[in-house]
Length: 82
Image (cartoon, rainbow, N blue to C red; front, side, top):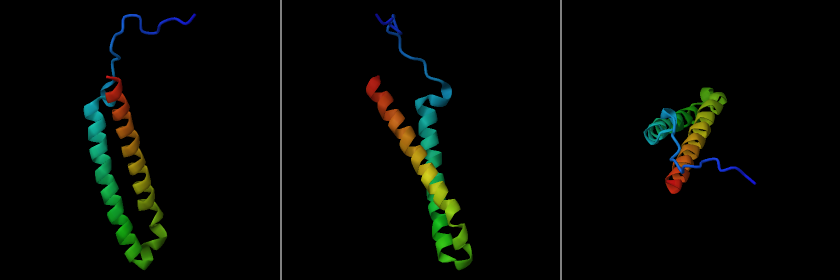
């Protein structure tokens, strides 16, 4: 028989860095990084000397977009559980 992990049916306490405000702030900052990296990709692709450095803004676009998606999914799952 499994023990009940939450016998009093209390709401889970979230850390300050996992609060809704912190998640929305992180999404906002990462969207700014995403747009900044897209601008960097446009500049790097337009200049022949900078094409060899196109991987860096591309990596920033991928990582910031991935983080925005993951944090947004976390917020959606949390809002459905509340």
